[in-house]
Length: 108
Image (cartoon, rainbow, N blue to C red; front, side, top):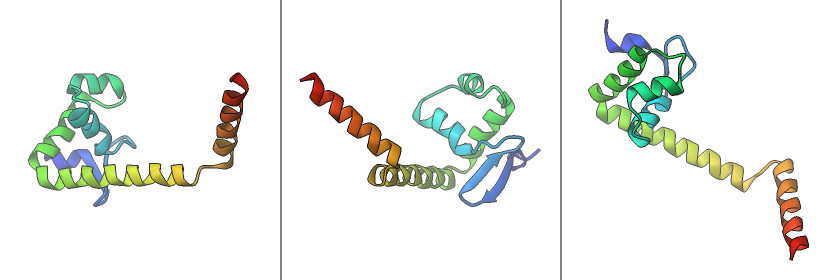
């Protein structure tokens, strides 16, 4: 079995583990940035098999340049989304911030 057979390649920036809706970035983020072992990742995502997790890591190791760029693009997208949410918060967030500020003023 080829390692690629473990994945659905939906787009160049969206690779999912077959049998799940989880993208490889989720597993690789745990492995690369949080330094989790494959066994720990399997405990975090019990619906994935250890084989699927190892296949994801192996795919990264076989394609380091491509997957490093994939991860960089994903992280950039996440940061842009967070900034957009901070710049344009929903009404309920604005209201909660106002209430918090008001309570802080009332305490002093």
